[in-house]
Length: 333
Ligand code: AQP
Image 1: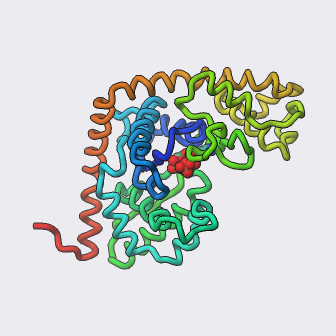
Image 2: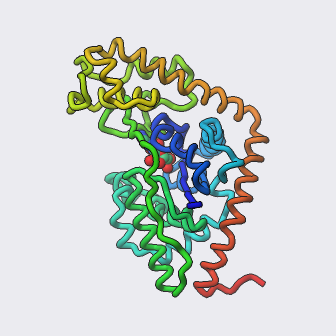
Image 3: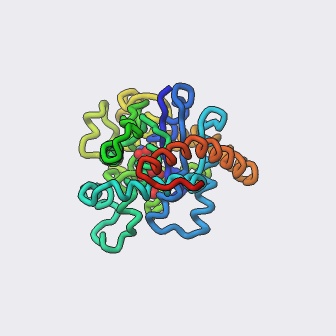
């Protein structure tokens, strides 16, 4: 069975974007692949997190993943910092990756913005940690969006250089996993920007723990245009907000945008938005209720994460030991 690694940052409450673009596709993969799913808290701190927020968000993220259908009996679900081998292999990779390679990463430029001098060094070497996350488990398949493809290529460059420099065949080649339809969900305030859990505006996103009225209000206030819905997706050109709302309804009702438009063509947003809110609530309310139940018993949640970390560590430590031996580190006797 192919081994899959995927991570999600506890940098906020997971959004509808994280759900439709990633988490939802992780669930069926548990039956067909050997899956490791990781709450990547070490990645989250590359941008400042208040300690109390990081702590709460880490549990919320784990609860959300379970509530969405990840099953610790079928996959390994764990928190990155619980397996220190991630940070250790990342350090080894810091010494393998070249500065020129990291300088080409467009996500660093996007996230650091104009004031790159003031970004953390962690944000700069983030792709080396991501390479370590995957290669520690010799995972060969990684579900990624387009924005992460460059990081996967870098992970392959690191694996290749490590194998070459130390004359080993330790790290495999990683392939991007193209699974089900990964919907790209855009901000409710600006249809050209992706929906993000760390967007300063809470109105820009649907959080998986938003109460029903909050979902209704956010959809009601979502930016749109005055035109009615067209008959086909071609008519959504130049209307990013309209395209986004149609895409969301299609994704949560398991239909194509064509099918949604066939039913709603000619409708204005005054009529469309309440229907969209109803569909979202029907889909998300059971997830929220299950998240709330899991978060009421943090001892059970923490215990499930501990078991996940134990399983992950049992897989990770032999790889780390092999990497260190290949590099010539004296093993502790
Ligand atoms: N808007 C989105 N539409 C579709 N997929 C999305 N993903 C994120 N936003 C959308 C997918 O969610 C997975 C986990 O992402 P992450 O937590 O590692 O970081 P991210 O991609 O940077 O997600 P956010 O929500 O935008 O987080 P912040 O605000 O902290 O940067 C990935 O598979 C991603 O493609």
